[in-house]
Length: 117
Image (cartoon, rainbow, N blue to C red):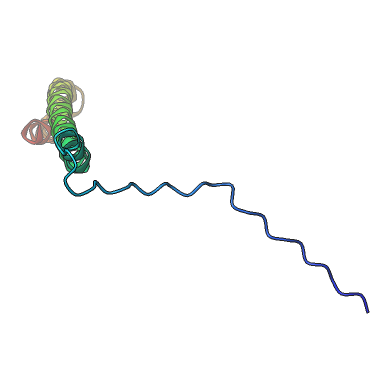
């Protein structure tokens, strides 16, 4: 019986990171302290920067959205006022052609629209 030949496993192509050698006792730390402080402080300062940026962007987005809503409300209110005026003008025409009772319905609708805007 022929035994199945096993292929050897390929070695990983990624190199393992080199461990950093600790500073020796009595070594001059004055050179290393600022570097170590910068490295140790980096993640916290990046987090703080990211949080501040995200907060700033959220505030800007909120302000912009509020501006758009206020502008849209003003436009919609203006449009409803125009519709109300058209309905009031139409009420006068309805008075002349169909009678005051029907004209009053149109005026009532115009007043309702004006009150809504």
